Image 1 (tube, chains in turn blue, brown):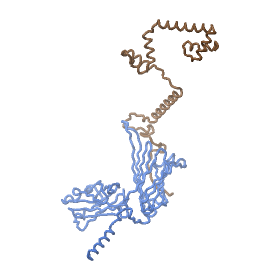
Image 2 (cartoon, rainbow over the protein chains, first blue to last red; image 1 turned 180 degrees about the vertical axis):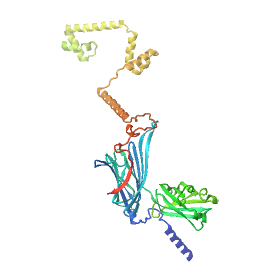
Image 3 (cartoon, rainbow over the protein chains, first blue to last red; image 1 turned 30 degrees about the vertical axis):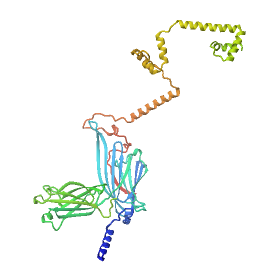
Image 4 (spheres, rainbow over the protein chains, first blue to last red; image 1 turned 60 degrees about the vertical axis):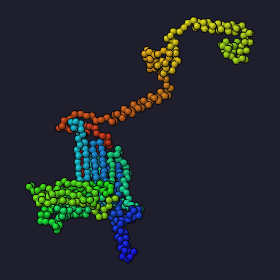
Length: 325
Length: 175
């Protein structure tokens, strides 16, 4: 083997070593993330019955997990059901962003054919919560004159590290300190990635003419992505920009790769007025694996008179620093 | 052996069922006691008379078959597996007798059976009471039944005392 071959082999070996992820998981030592990510957040979910200023605890549960842990509170009564989902994110060292999705269902009566009639309610709310505050959920609304059911959610920083001594992430923990009678109140928890990077590209006859991207698209939070014309864009594209209102509304565990479900509208930046052309795309949706491309044909909706083929391609990946597992 | 002892074993002596020594003692006493000899003669005469009377009279066929039926096992009684073929009357009679038979149980077993039957009845009745569906009715389209009038469509915890029709609300407050 001559000198040049030897040097090439050494360089190749160094390149492989630098680009590999360590091979076997039990041999690789995962690099620890920044200090903030090591913290675990604990949520104390306590259900009270308030009557004449007196409080009786009905149930108590704690949910503990890494930042970004989501939990769900279900209340099941004979005539009433509540499904409250909470997505939490640590947006600052002492601030949690909580996005709540409340769905209620109440038995209203029976129809002529003896079928049950339900009254349903849906609310979405986003709150910034400090660790010196607590969330209060009133499933049946306020009622100061008689018995009131109240659910308090108190966040705290847990003393446990987010990682075990072996380097593996500590799993989610749900502890039922006091079970509700008849299993009326249940708490579930899960951890899925919340932050995503989105890349949107507009192609005209196969050429990229507009692009938009974001590294901080949150799960279940619609975000506007402006497609900015590239150098190859003609005056028609420049005069008709597109804004995507994108919502990554579900994260699906799957193998070999997890999947995401998206929904979006594409419209022009100007407000819609009577007589204006309709949006470019309306209530579009799709499901794809993380990192794969979702193509949408806009030829029938965008600059139709030009006779060119327009295609929108979306690609969703995990944001930098976000982990799938 | 004296007269009292002899009278106690007289039947066995006449049937020749005494042991050698007891029979010898009885014979010796008979030789000495005229009263016991007379008793022996009367017993023998009575037995002979009975045998004569019995041999002169034949029992009726019904009596014979009834006695035979009683002594046979139940399954043979039902189907009357004998030399003659069973007829419908015999089978019906056998079945009737099967139904009419008295079931005899020891008292503790009978009491346990009664307690078991009562317990099962009570449990079954209670289960039916609590799983009874809500009462149905016919209602017009314009009016719905007020929730308080009807039972819930499924069993669950009772939260009705908190429900005044209000909308769920979420807010934050200082700890």
